[in-house]
Amino acid sequence: MGSRGRMLLVSSVLLVAGCSTTTSGGSAAPAVATAAATTTSAAAGCGSRVETGSLPDWADAGFHGDARVPHVFGAKGDIVAVLFAHPLRQHRKDGSNNKILWVAQASTTSPDPTAPATLVITATLDGTDTTVTREVAGGPGPSIIDVPQAGCWRLDLRWSGHTDTMDLVYAP
Image (cartoon, rainbow, N blue to C red; front, side, top):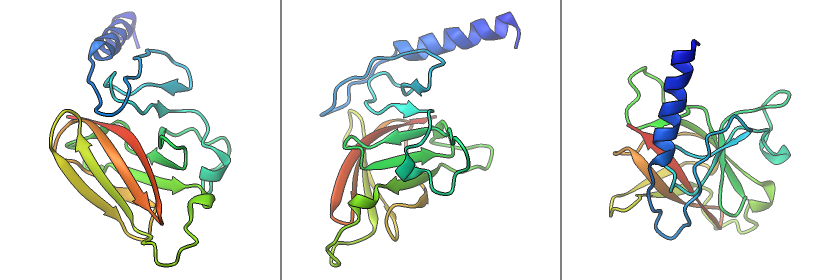
């Protein structure tokens, strides 16, 4: 990439980092433009960071070597969303999907056989009343999670008697 391309990329990152959104019920995360293993999401106010470092041992089954894929931890750290489509998009013109692999720590498997195993995701668009519900049958695992609008979405996650939250940004 030439110097003009790098300058355009840096300018774009700084422009996006300067935007902010307030996440209801959460604190704003600072925008950081860095090549480090951890990056913030495109919307500065969206509270959950997209990490690009190694997955934790409990979440790396099926990955080889030092798996470095974009992922987001739940606020409690009991679940991780591995983002196979990054950035997530409201519309994917290339025919790909918003594939997310949900991995919960083994300790979050409910000893209560009556607790539903299905992962129920209630997503709310930041600053609006727009809410959608998505389900992953059988509990945390592979999924395609689409939302009706671009923006920062607060996800309330419920599975096997457990709960967690995270924010995910969907680009236009």
